[in-house]
Structures are given as C-alpha cells and as structure tokens.
Image (cartoon, rainbow, N blue to C red):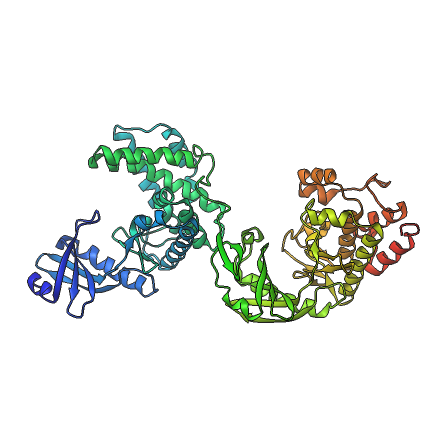
Length: 593
C-alpha cells in the first residue's frame, strides 16, 4: 500500500517518540474519531512482524487487556501493523502516586494477566529448554567475561549459575511477552493494560519474571502482588530458586548490553547488579528481600476495617444485616458478625482470601468445597454446646454459612486476655465446660464423625450464661477416616495417627483429642508450652507424660491417670470410646468439685 494512501485514510497523525524500537510509530485518528497505533517496520522484518501480529491476535482472543491487533500489511516504507490505541498513563508514572494497597492490587492483576498469556503453547518443534537456555547462559557468561568490566560480587552470581543449572531440567515452555515489567504497562481508566510485545519469545514461563527487577525497584508491593497473582497465592520455593537463576544470568548480560549506550545506562546496570546481590543475600537466599510476606489489602464495610490477601467485593454481606465485626485471621474463611435490627448472626464465607489463607495450603475452590461439606456436619451434630447453624447458600461468588450469634469470648491464642480469663475461672466451671465438650464429642462419635482440627481455637465461653460453645467443626470427617490433610489446628491436640500419612482416625482418635484438651485446660502453664513449641512437632508425636501429676495439675491424681491414658501413643491402651472416657473421668472425679 502507498504510504500516502495509507495515511489518507486517517484525519490526524501524531508521531510517537517513546520506546527503544526501530519502528516508526504514529498515533492516527480515523474519520469516526477512533485512535489507532500505526507501526511501520523495515521490510526485512516482514516474517518477524507477521509472526508477532499472529501471536497478538491469539493473545487478544484471551481477552488480555492490550493493544488489540487490527490490520497487517506492507507499504512502500516496509511492513505496517495497526493496533488499538491505549489512551492511558504509563504505569511507571502512576505507581508513585498510588497507595501501597493500590500498587499491590495492580500487581495482582499483572500476575493474573501474564498467567493467562502463558496458556498459549510453544510450537511443538521448539527445542528442549535445558539445552537451549544452557547454551544461552554459556554465551552470556562468555560475553560478560570478555567485555572488560566486572562488578563487585560477581563471583556469587557466577557460582549460583553453575550450581543450579539442574533446575532447567524438564521445564515447560509457552508463549512469553518477553519484556514484562512496569515499563511496558499502562493504566487506562483505572485498569491495567499491557503494551510492547516486540520481544516475544517461547520458553519457560517462569523465565518471564527475569525482568521483575525493574518492577521490584519501582514498587515491592507491585512485584509481590504480581507473583501472588500469578500463582494464586504464595509462590513455591522452586520458583524462587529459578527466579534467582534467571535474574543472575540476566544481570551478567545487562552489563555488556549497556556499554554501547554510555555511562548513564552502564551505571544503572552496575547499581542493579549490587541490588540483586543484596536482594538475594549474595545468592545465599533465593527469596528476594523485596518480596513482602505480610503485604495485604485493607478494606472496609459498614465502618469496620479488615484485611485480605486479595481484594474482594463483600457488598452482598449486607443482605444478612449491618456488619459490626469482621474476623479476618480465620484461616481459609472470612467471618462476619452482622445485625439485621432484630437479631445478630455469625456469617462464615468461603471464596475470598483472608490474610492467613496461604498458611492453609488451600485454594478458594477447595475452601468453598470444604465449607459446603461442613454444613452436613453442623446439621448432624446439633448440640447445646455447638454454635447453632441456620442455613447456607451460594452467594457473592462463593459460599456462606449462617449461624446464630453468640456473645462469647475465645480462649485462643495462648496467653491472650481471653485465654487467661478462662484459665483463671473457677475450677468447677472449667470442669463443667470440659464435660460439655466431651458430651458434644460423644454425640459426634455416635453420629459417625471423627474430630479433625479441634483445638482451643474451636472453643468459646459465654461468661454471662456460664456456657462453653464449640464454634468450628468444619473439618470433622466420617469415621473411620484415612486422610492426607496434614496437621490442622494446634500440634498440642493432634494424635500420633493424625501425624502419620495413611493412618486410620476414628473414635479412639477423639479420645486422644479429649485427653489433650484436658491437659491444656487443667495442666497448662506458659513455660511448659514454650518448651513444647521449641521442640517442635516431633515432641508431640513422641511425648510421654510422667507417672505422677506435675505441680501444675489442678485436679485429682485419679483424673490425671485417666487423661494420661487417653493420650497414650498406643491406641490400644487408650479408652476405646468417648463414653468410656466420660465414665472413667466421672468415677475418678471425687473431690474435684
């Protein structure tokens, strides 16, 4: 097409000077007022530009927010492409003016976008990644050593590369943006948009993050959010090890790359090399220091603030009433106290990511599934000491379970005011509370359930009515249960079989849990707990209680013998049912009241 004819189809054209590309870029306006980006490349790049246009079409088909490809062809000046125009601001310019939460949220979005881009497969003829990238690595090391410039500490970079080449084995490959960082992103009407796919390639999806150094330098919150958005939570350690490898290789090549551009660019790359060494502690720690483990999103509803790992629209919660309390540290669910003007309710919601979500190794899909399964447990195990279940429903993109609100206080965490208040309560009231807990578990056992994840965090106490309330039985399973769920709740309560993959859990397991509960209620002292925590899980797997009650034991020696038997590591030596445990407990209780 004749260039004059090409430009004649537009009523306005303005040159675009930004960017490193050799292309001639122009913002053109059509007769209907629509703006486009016109790019003209040398004809020698026809095949490259045609391939890029094809990949842009595939990416756009995934609804990636980007410059959408419109037309491709040749003209007298070379090869041209027309793409949609983004009327926004450079993210690099916008980021400093945003709050840390807003930076993090945009990072999350960028991670979700690149994850979608990586669903485009590499050609079947693509060379295997290990040999290809090792060859590239060798070339970059050779050029760095030959360029005549070295940076302090490069021996750590070089050593890490040589020691970790094995990480390249059997890595998958996909389409890559090729230059994915804040410099190639824009914000248009508050939404993130990706630009400049010129360096696209096919390779290990995780290698895409070798440019995250620029994003991390601009905003650790954004960079952290990008990784969390990509992985849907905490990145695995295997990723961080490869990230360090790819950044190490890139750090070497950045030095000789910058030399032709002059002292300013070279100084930038030399400084970045020192940043890399600092981030990775001279390559001794694969998780960079800019990665923020505790970053979260602050939100508010009805004047109540709470925090999440990722933003979530909870406006639907007002269906149940006005929010007066939010529980945002409850593992995989976010819980709300609401008031509809006549009654109060406790609403447990699965589908969002509370701040401790990653510690549970779950996903929002699993969280919804688990809460749905828990509904039948609450229905089957209705008891005066169990929080009263009302109903549950799918809502707000997740699942909500609604309970009656109880004006009660938790006894966890250890040594908190709530814990100290309960532990300092009259012994007769504590005994009654424990017996009510055993009564509930006798019912649960009779209904065919085994108690998984019962610990002091499951216990509330109503000091007005002197009543214990069990508030969390979400993970109780049908007995016998053989699970791979791992250690849930507190290691102070789990039986040996709960620590053993493939072991059977049943009513005898509940006996152990009740014995452990008794020890925590009637034998607790902070120094002992600190000792147990320092020794770790293995202590709980092998602990043996002394033959005579310690000074901290608050009840009779006979009851000590009963609960010591209940927590025996040998299942055959425990009481064989909750009913038997209750009977022995009561028989041994003379003089405790």
